[in-house]
Image 1: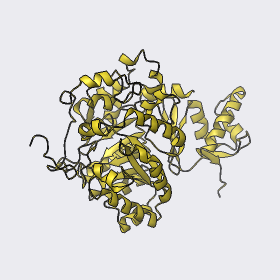
Image 2: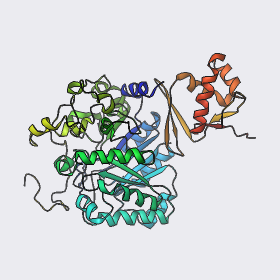
Image 3: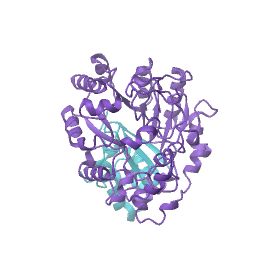
Image 4: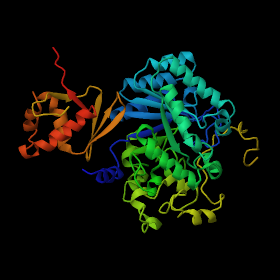
Length: 376
Length: 92
């Protein structure tokens, strides 16, 4: 079977997700300006330990091989290690994303003693100034300390996870060197206009010239750098980047949020992309297999305005979430279309007319931006 | 290593195989790689390896006709490289 027909199979959806993200909590010690889930404060409807274990039972029955845990900051949950151990003992590997605040020497050793655990430390600048402007004061030191502790505990190959912005594109080589220094693997992903990112994307997303830089860099280093296959819109530049060239939302990817709502992907926390809730009868399995939203996302999608573009096979029209939250039609070009085909449409969309992220758990006063919250 | 008809193989103990419409997904818990088995017959063969003395007898038992053996040898070679299958360890 050729690679292309495999992609066609994947578009029709899998029996179980291969990239399931589970945000364990909306609580977070940080307040990153691009947070996909607008995290900050815990939601009182958060799933209990027993409910979380029931989800893991369901995922085991579906033969989900591994899950990506995030938040918020997942390590603030008191049952964090309990859930980690429960997951792994059920044959579900865990990769979790953290800002590193809670990885002290003891936790690092505990993590190093566990099998099938991957850790992603979020870092958006090799230096404190670049990183802290986005992730908050002190967050660079926090991440470095966590990495030092993991290294000292011989955790092995953890991941350094970078959201690429226009302020850190020039640091890609330095990020790679930093990862090499720690014996870590570098992961770079695309900035999405989701959550608080909807407000900051316009200032932070890479320029078109920088997109070319990212593409060239990935062509050179792509085999050794993880991307979550998030840069497939750049394939329109030419040769395809490594990875799955398609939008996986509701097909191979989904998100379970802290209160059990299931969304098509981690970048679309909005009612329009909510497929159901794990607390509903039938649980997660029914949502994945039967929800109207997911079934419709597995139908052939129209190329719309992109149909006449020669690059459509290469870029697939880009990211659904990026279009949605920038107010663009879903069957048209990605806001970062490398041919510039979205520029005109973007110029007439006002930010107030673009859809607003579905939920906001931001703390009332942001730590990183000294301005009053919207609506105050 | 090139897999031969006489090779004695098994699914790697750290690999889980999940059937899908196109064949199956295999996940290696050790190297965290996801591998696609792109034909249901390959899945059947891979899952039967352990029950037969060697590759040839597995192929025969799974009803794979001789003209298709070369493509199955190629598939198993590739799966051996990605550590989905490995040389069977003799126990007991």
